[in-house]
Every structure is written in structure tokens, then in C-alpha cells.
Length: 115
Image 1 (tube, rainbow, N blue to C red):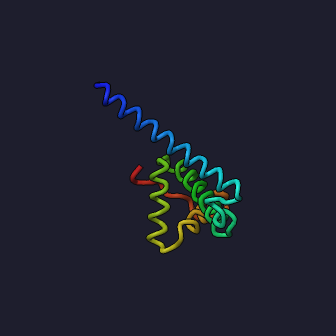
Image 2 (image 1 turned 45 degrees about the vertical axis):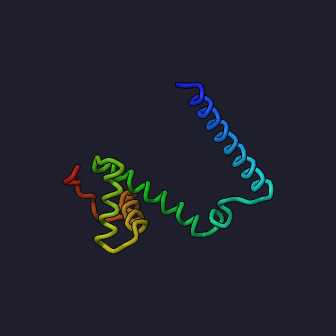
Image 3 (image 1 turned 135 degrees about the horizontal axis):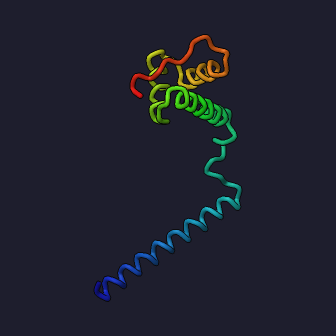
């Protein structure tokens, strides 16, 4: 590598470092003034509902993975397929599966033919 190329590379690294430092200062200034990129989202009911839905879907995936011996991706696909074919929200499909897994449902899970 020629001396000029090394100087250019060093200059590029210095510029990138200066950019990161400036971005860090900007972020710290926003936080100091009480600004948050998540303000209004994390406190809203839709955010809380999304967290609940995500948790329920994760539990349902775990039940499918354990019961059918499928991967996490396949478990998600199964939930999605049922959601689409029954025209129901995925959170409702997941809630029903979790209720069945807790002994409150009447049907046993069928083995996955794709596993």
C-alpha cells in the first residue's frame, strides 16, 4: 500500500470516528432534553398489546416446537398458515393454541407432515 493510500485510509477512519462522536453528542443532547425516539410509542396501549401478542405467539411457537418437533421458523409458518386459512389474527390463533396446551382445549395437535 502506498503512503498516499495509507493517508487516505487513515483520513477516512478519522472522519468516520468524528461522525460517530458527533452522532453520540447529538443523541446525548436529545436525551438530556428529555427526548426519546420511542416516546409516545412505548407508553401507548398498542405498544403494550404488541408486546403481549409477541409473547403469546412465542409461547405458541414453543408448544408447536415441543409437540411437533419442528424448528422455530416452521412453528411460525404453521401459525401463519392457520391464521391465513381461518382468516383470524395470529394472536388469536396463538391464544387458542396456548389455551389448548394448558388443557382448556378439546383437540389434540396433529403431527406435522412436513417435519
